[in-house]
Amino acid sequence: MRNLVAAFALMTTPALATEMTIEVEGFANGTITIDLLEDVAPNHVVRLSTLAKEGAYDGVVFHRVIEGFMAQTGDVQYGKMGMDMRHAGKGGSSYPDVAQEFSDLNFDRGVVGIARSQNPDSANSQFFIMFEEGAFLNGQYTVVGRVTDGMDVVDQIKRGHPRTGAVSGKPDVMKKVTVTE
Image 1 (tube, helix red, strand yellow):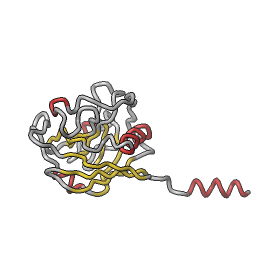
Image 2 (image 1 turned 60 degrees about the vertical axis):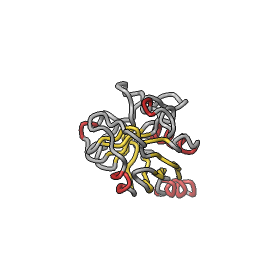
Image 3 (image 1 turned 180 degrees about the vertical axis):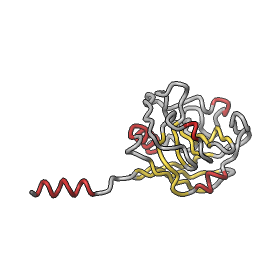
Image 4 (image 1 turned 90 degrees about the horizontal axis):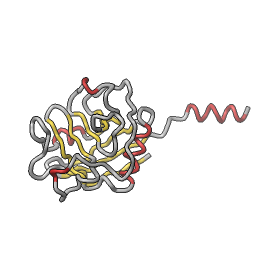
């Protein structure tokens, strides 16, 4: 009976949530808080959490920012502030790519998705935050989280070229990224 009570207590205890906090500096200044969705994309949450805990995201720029669409960041290989920004967005991390974890969650305003190439299983370190709803991404890209605080900061991120999203001049940067569980 004691084991049954203990098992029930574990089932009714809320799951630990992983929260990512991004301190943004540049045109936009402030903090973005993201609830990472372990139950939706567990392998991607592990990847983002690992890179954040290693400090790999610190100093990485928002390299592709398209008005009315999204702000992309996370290129820990070529996207650090001070690097040649012509290569930002072409890299990943030293870890292998992560297979897609598509879900039925919609790409609404504030949703965080995982960037990838044409190959659905090519996700690595890059992610993006939606400015507006993007239904054409639904079921095609992995949803990994939701902004829970700081959408005003997201809205202020310096925009790039209207078609390519390439940010000219000095882009906004993730000064410090932390994860708590």
